[in-house]
Length: 136
Length: 136
DNA sequence: ATTAAAAATGCAACTTCATTGCACGTTTTA
DNA sequence: TAAAACGTGCAATGAAGTTGCATTTTTAAT
Image (cartoon, rainbow over all chains, first blue to last red; front, side, top):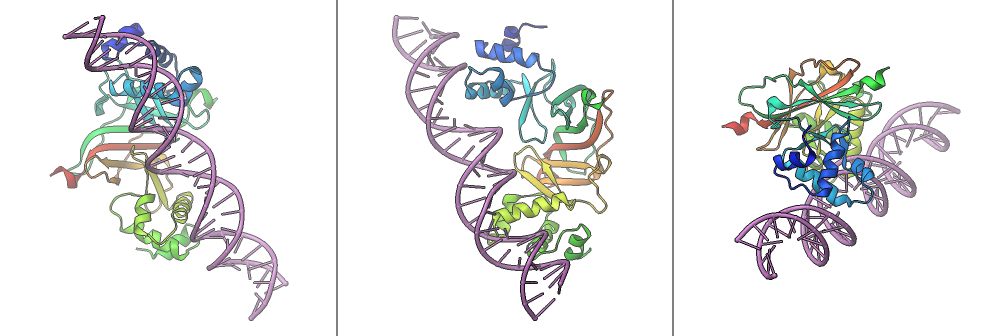
């Protein structure tokens, strides 16, 4: 995998120490992560800086945000080559049991037919249920 | 269409004056409505009462809430016979232009295949773009 | 019909998460 | 090396949703 520094530069994000650490952390997550999660991970860092780091990452297309219905925004790394276009968009899964939110990048959102005159710019599919870990 | 009073009783909601008015209003909407919208509609009524009215309606399955990405929860009437099960769920559309949120009950969410071990309990599909009114 | 219990309403306050302003420090670049 | 741009940290603010409690209204039992 590409080094965090290169990855940031590829997305035109200046690779500060903070940002490299945050990206590193994002890479280590199995589930999507919230600002609060990050705060716990980086107790010494400022909440606002973390907030703005996520904001920047999102604007530059390094991560995408996920509204999983909990009211808390979660973030996850974008796939290589993702432009967050409708055809890029994958399914998000929220587990009611462990309350983790997952990207399922292998599972693309089927094209949705709409009434005449409606134009699609973006699609979000959120599935709620029980994840593989919690089903057993 | 069934009278509002009967409709409420059918859903085991006591038909108070307030609730009948709110249901009436919900029926007159083309787009989903927010708590704020209701407040404007009912200037004399208390915000909290409206809030709890919506809460009650939702718990009893008369309306469903829609997270359209704006951060403001919208509400719309459930279809006759809707149990808000995955197979009942329809597409929601958010128009970036007029910022209205629509239910598209004719357009059901296709069954989504998930990785092994994942169990679906609920699905939400939000499409963003331009609605028929705003496309011209 | 009268009264006790249950439910709905209204007011106030609070929680949580997201966001902005501004000062200070650091990095880039001319 | 100085100026400009950018990143960081602290404080304060904003918006939406939610809860507690007193009061009023409705329901149900005697």
